[in-house]
Image (tube, rainbow, N blue to C red; front, top):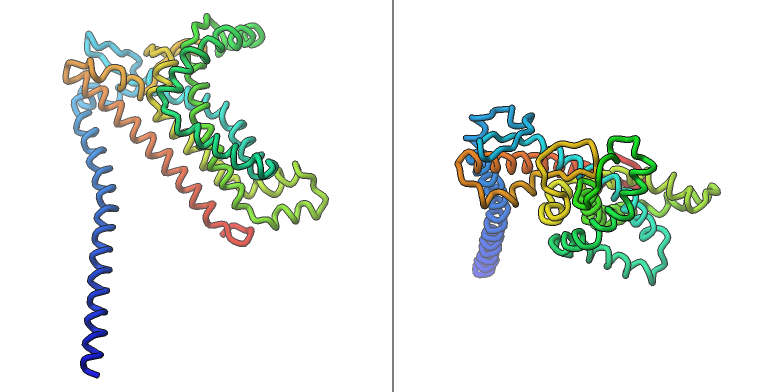
Length: 319
């Protein structure tokens, strides 16, 4: 009996030791991500200290970007980033929700999985490839076929005034929309598929048509998750660099017209960081990176909160 107790005790200590090692190792991995994020933020914060001390909060409200005289303001890049991203959402959200509803509610089985795979595959295409397609195909198409009717019928609006050269805010918004449709539609599809079947059956039993069932019983139930998917797409649009850099025109000025070229925060960092020579120039670019990081973090936090709300759905009700 004594040897049996000793054997079980030894096995118990061995398991406890193994569990402790496993917990320490995976805990180290998780802590490493937090440390990495902290170091990233610290590096950007310290690297932007010269710009923050020189320009203060005026850096956010100044539209002058003059490397020769070392006068820097981030307003044109903030404007270009937010406007192009919102334009991408306006274009992408209807397509994304339509794709999600079709794949989850209407598509036959033979078509559902090939289409889902193709859409997800689009998200894996390198952004530089989409940028090249934007330069050679999308920009000429918008210049020759989309801009003329917009200018003719909506030219009384400031948004559609002025000459169209192809590389513009409108082209940048469209290319961003193409890039965020896969992630937004895929997440929305997964969200819609979590809606309990008895929600649909109840609506059908009350005489609702297929469209009414989707509109009344499915979409309201999944609205938090769909909105979270939209916010994640918005975060992707804000942080996108290469594709939008190739088609937006890269002009640091603020214009009311979507036909005018613009600039984004990610684009100016990619284009000018290598050629930045003075310490103040580099620090200003680093501060733009800090602003971009803060905006992206805030957007992703909002999206995560909305996803958590979706995960609390139990038994057809919200808790």
